[in-house]
Length: 76
Image (cartoon, rainbow, N blue to C red; front, side, top):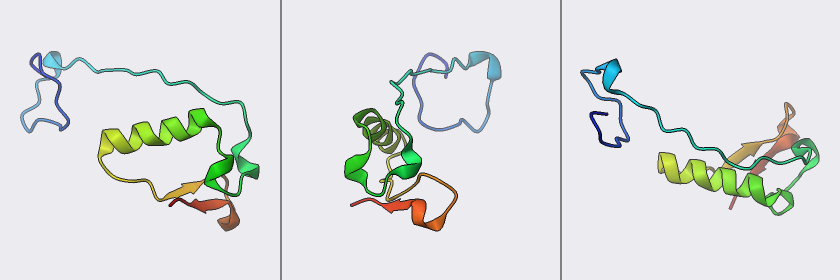
């Protein structure tokens, strides 16, 4: 915003002064729905979670890999 990288949305936003930053991350081919623990996650998915944690500044403690309650994984 106005030539600076900001981590918040300015109160008085001037849309013509905003340039979004897009980051591409590697994907994964594995079916996550069958996974029951964090150790079985593909490395690219672990890296994706770490990226989100770093960007938002909050640890991700639960990961849902499907619609069933049993498909919710508690991270350490």
